[in-house]
Amino acid sequence: MKTVVLMGELGDINKLPTTSDASVAFVNAGYTLMQQGNNQAAIQEFEKALSANPKNSLAWLGKGQALYNTGNSRDAITAFDNSILNDPTNSEAWASKGNVLISLGNFTEALECTDRATTINPGNQWAWAFKGDALFGLYRCDEAKVAYNKSLIINPDNAVAQKGLQMAENPTICKPKATLQQSTISNQAFSGDIVQDQTWSGEVRVTGEIRLAKDVTLKIEPGTVVYLSPNSNDQHPSGYDASDDYTTKYNDPVRLASWSSNAINIDCRYGIIEVMGTPENPVIFKPEGSSTSPGQWNGILIGRGKIQYARLYSAGQTAMNIFGDYPGTVEIAHNEVKYFHWAGIDSHRNNVWIHDNIVEGGGHQGIGVRYNTLAENNTVSRAETGIGVEDANGAVIRHNTVIDCPVGIGLRSGTSAEVTDNTIPCVIG
Image (cartoon, rainbow, N blue to C red):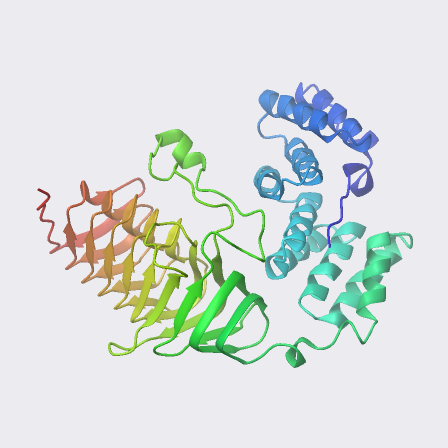
C-alpha cells in the first residue's frame, strides 16, 4: 500500500519559515521541485540545505519524502529519523516515517510512529490516514475505521482515508486477525506480523521479517529448528546494510563490509520472546543450506523475555540485540552464538543478565554491555573485542573468559563498571 505524499499536501510550502538561515531557500526550492515531480533535483537542493544547516528538520523531511518517491525506502527512513532528531515535534516526519514502514509491511512500528504524529498534531489528516493503514495492516479494523474517519473529518477528499475506510468496512477483506493466524506454527514456513500469542515447534522456515505486535508472546519449544532464508526477505525488500555513523568515524573495516540488504530480523522489541531450549534439546537458529558464512540473516531484536539453550549461527549485524525500557529482567543464558558478522550479544537497556554463553567468531565484539547489565561466566573467542563496555553505570563483568581477542575487555566512554575475576589468555599461533 504505497502512498506518495508531497510536502505540499502535508503542509503549505508557502508557509515554510523565512529566516536569515541560508538553508531556507534551498528547502523551498526542493519542495517546489518535488511537487513538480523532479525528485532527484529536489534531493540535491535538500542536500545543499543540509550542507548549510545540518539541523534543518524540514530539509531532512523533504529529503526523506523525495527519496521515498524514488523508491529508496531505507535512506528515506534515515532522513526521517534525522528530521525527528532535530525536531521531535515534527508531526509530518513521524507520519512520513510511518508511511514508509507501512509500505515495508512493518505495521507495528508504523503504528508507533503515527501515534506520535497524531498526538503532536491532531489536525494532521495524513497522520490519521496512515494510522488507519497501520491498524488495517494489523487487522484492527474497528480502530482503523476510527482513524480513517478522523482524517476525513479534517479533509473529506483525502483519497487514502477514503480507500482505507472502504476496505476496513468490507467484511470479506477485514476479517478478525485471530481467525486468520495460527496459534501454533510447526513444520511449516512463516513470515510477517505476529498479532496474537504464538508457539513454534518442530521445523519452522522463516522466509521474511518477523515482527511481534505489542505485548504479544512468541514461545519457541525445546528442540525447534528455525531455518532462515539466507539473504532473502519476502517482507522487507529494501533492507539495510551495516554502514553507519560509527563506521564512518572510526573506519571499522569489519562493519563496513556489508551483507545482503535483505537480511531477516526476528523483531520482538515490542513483544515478548521465550526461547526455552534445554541442554538435551536446544533451539537452533540457522540459515538454510550448509554455508557458515556470516550475515545470511540479521538477528533477534529483544524487548522482553528469555533466550536459553539456543544456538544461533551466521547472523549479521547482531545475533541477539536487547532494547527497551521495560520492567523485569531479560535473561540470555547457556547459548552458543557463532559465525556472526558484527556482534554476538549486545545489551542496550537496564536489567539484562547475560551468563554462561559461548560466543565465537564475531567481527567487532562478542558481547556488548551497557547500563547495569550483568555479564558473567561467558566464554568469548576470536572477536575484535571480547566484551565491549560503554555507557555502563552499575554494570558488572565478572568470571568471564576471553580468548584470542585483540582487545579482551574494552572500557569505553561513559563507563563506570565493576570488572572482576575475568580470564584473558591469548593463545593465537
